[in-house]
Every structure is written in structure tokens, then in C-alpha cells.
Image (cartoon, rainbow, N blue to C red):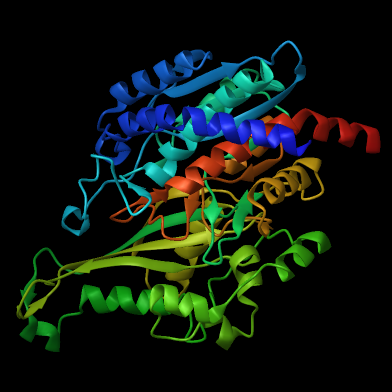
Length: 467
């Protein structure tokens, strides 16, 4: 692809950028909080109308429960290859905006200052959705049509764990059939490198509860009454030792070892412990120091067990001398390929019983399996090489993210390679107050999506020639 082609894409992107921002800002004004069941019908109607306005066909799938799934289809142009299809996965729901007092702008009133657009959902994931649709318009107006078919799957429950997505994938597998998929997120890291992943970790998110009495008691009875909070603390301490090793029997069952290629890729990933310390203001050393692990290896290939929150007794201002009747903890386990969240739940339950904590109950709130694309697939090299061309900077493409999403079922049902990339940046603050994207990143993201898509069919043909 010549420089003149890229220049034409860049020029057209600048020409329609203002229109694209206006569409995005309207999208961001919709308070589409799935956890609170807000603005779902309005958002489905809006994104459907945007797809249609851009020349696409829309189907709203709502026959299997949960929030509707929006299907969008754009056919290949006359000069394109209709035998090739690229699928985009996005979601229209967003996280709750709370705590509202920490926002410097109104979360659902998009505001631009200092070269950034602030709003809830702008980086996760509404900005990426509109950038991708805009890229299609750029190609339609510079090339006279698209180089291949393009499909969209835009769901409305990603922020609550996509509990109803799998039945839609299974029933409508033919509708979403494609050669490859571009996932929802990505951006630039602290060194302004382009950060991408070709997979994702799984999750077993559990709630553990200890109940010791029917009512809270005066703390003086702690001389003879067991304490539910201490009971739960001891149960938790039995599952992970002081060296931060997970010691639940069966927790590591089934793990698929990484390939040599995946290990080599991870060894080349950039990582700065000092930068991480400064970014988060860490007060303790990295736990990988004590485990003798490479943080990059742990981030990609090792499962985790994290206490996300605890609730018990009195935590308000001042003192209240109380012995709590109950205690509850949220436990988040990030999983790697081969681990099954239901087996993790069973292993934790068996561990608690074996160690005398039969009274501590466990409930699985969210379970998802991990997924990694075949790193030798030509999609991997194509998205990376095109990113280098467009952004003119280093590109970091890891075998999988440390985070979680419903990628496993896409791979299982649709059997395609997946790469995640987007318009975020290291300060995007997804899920946090003051979420943002940088305007320049949004513009570059549109250019990249257009250029990547333009060369997509040829990349797949190269695979056939090699085989």
C-alpha cells in the first residue's frame, strides 16, 4: 500500500472528523448503564440508526433474553472481495459513573478540554465503535466501497459479564460468521506505544460469606463468641500464603502451557517496574519479586486470586464497638487457557471444607474461560505491521490481556483469530471517574482502522499462498 493511499485516508478522515465527533457525543449522552438497566432501548435505537445512516444493514436480536444484541452488516464494494469478512465486536453498555463527586465534568455531558474528550463510556467502548464506523465511511468515500464484507456485533451486557451473549452467538453463528475479529479495546501505553492483545484471561468471580449470628453484638462478647469477620479472614488466609502463592488444591488443574512462540513474544514485551510503581503510587514491592517471576510472564500466563472488597460490621466515622453478625468478600480469580471457572468454584468449596470452614458459603457471580488466538495466523502480523505503518511507532502485541471479556465463546463458536485494539491511552481511566480519550488518538484510530481493513483481504490471500 502506497503513501498516497494513506495520505488520502488521512485527508478524508480530517474532512469528516467533526461529523464523527458529533455522532459520538450524542452516543455518549445516553446513560447506558447495564448494571442499572438504564437507557437500553434508546441506545439500541441510536446505534442502529447510526449503522443505517452509514449505509449498513441492521438486525436487532432480542429473542433469547437479556439486553438486545445489535447486528450490523456492510457489504464489500464492487472492487472488493465478497468472500472475505471482518467482524467487529463492541458493546453499547457502560459502567456506572459513581462516585459522581470525583468527576471534573458531568459524566454524561461530553466535554472537550486539553485535547481530550471526557465522558463515561468514551474509551470503553463507545469511542471505538464510532471510530470503526467512521473508518468504513472513509473507505467508502476514498475507495468507492469496502475491500471486504464487514460485520458488527454490538452487545449490551459486557459490563455485567455478558451473561446472555453465548446463546446469541450459538443461535446466530452463521449470521456472525467471519474470517477474523477485531475486539473492543486497546490504546497507547505510558511510552506511547500501540498496545494490542490477541487473547484474554478468564474469570471466576466469587462471593464468600460467613454468618456467625442473627444480629450484631456488643464487642465485649468477643471473649466467648466467634467473630464472623475473623472467621472469613482466616478462611481467606488459608487460600493464599504469605509468599502470595495460591494454595487451593485443584486451582491449577488443566492449564494449557504457552507455546514457545508465545513465550518468546512475552519475553520481548516492554515492562518497567519503576513506571508501574509511579503510575499507581505503589507502597509495596511487586509480588513477583518474592515469587522469583518475570512480571510479564505472570501478567500473561499466570492465574490470580484477588480480594476485591470486604464488608462487615461498622466502617463509618468514629467508633462503634460491635462484633459483626456476618462478613462478606468479593474474590476475583483471573484464569488462563485450560482453567474452568466452575472447577475453580468447586476447588474453593472443597478447600474450605477440608480446612474446617464448612460454614463459609461460596457463590460464583461471573465465570468466563480464557482465550488465545493462534499467534502464527496472518491476522496477527497484518494488524501489527499496519499499525507500525500508520502510527509510526513501536507496537506491542501480547498473546493475551490481563483482563477478561467474552472472547472464549467467540473463538469456540465462530472459530476465528481475534485481536483487540482501540483508541484509548494510558490515562483513559476506563471504569473510573474522568474517563477520556485524546482527540488525536481518535483521529489516528480511524485512519488505522481504514488502512488495516484495506489490506485485510490480501493478508488472508497470503495465508492461502503460503499453505
